[in-house]
Image (cartoon, rainbow, N blue to C red):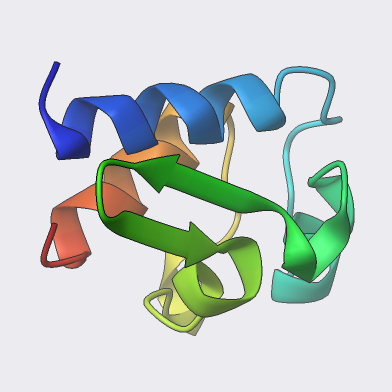
Length: 79
């Protein structure tokens, strides 16, 4: 599995129990199990939810699913 796919899977898993739609960055961070400190790791790559949140823009909201959040983050990150 590629780093991109691995991180995508971890993000969707972390947000499995989240209540969608999520309308704000604060609500998104709070939806992660450990908030901004939630960490995804793959090989030498490590990213926290707080770091990943910096890749998001106000027009990205609302998010309607965990997959949508993961798609947006991994597509903007340089994994």
